[in-house]
Amino acid sequence: MLNHNYYAAGVNVEIPIATGGNLDAKTQEARLLKRAADEDVIDAQNTISRDVRVAWLDLGTDKERLGVTAELIQSAAESQRLAAARYRLGTSSIVEFTQAELNYTEAELEAANAKYDYQSARALLNLPRADPFKYPLGICSKKWRGPIPGNPRQLFEQALKP
Image 1: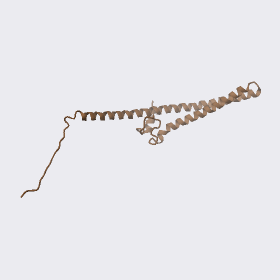
Image 2: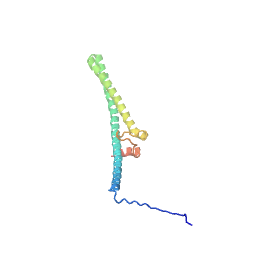
Image 3: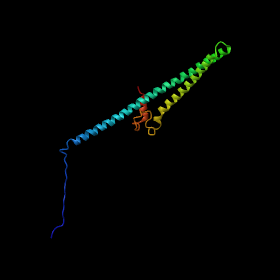
Image 4: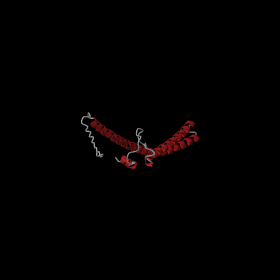
């Protein structure tokens, strides 16, 4: 009688002896892609840092402008009051009076613009802290489309350091 138990085993070994440098090229490509991605992250962090610094400086400038425009309004109001008194006394013309009124109106407009700029700068600085995933661009440049890398508050505080 014949025994029907038959066993077989096989081993397939593949050794890349002559791949023409394909594996080395793929390894080098992966390293270069990783380095490019790391540089993109660093570039995005630098852009965020720069933009935060610029926004912070703009906020300071706009805050100072609020004080300057308040003084400008006071000066224009005083000038308008004096021009009105001179006009009533007949020592100046209507042109001087209307010019003083125009200067006062322009001072009020400048104050309104300064207030708008100041509030816009504050809102711009508060935007990334509000929800960085809802507003991934925040104050970043328009080319960065991903989420803000790292903790936004930490980046903000780091950007303010001299």
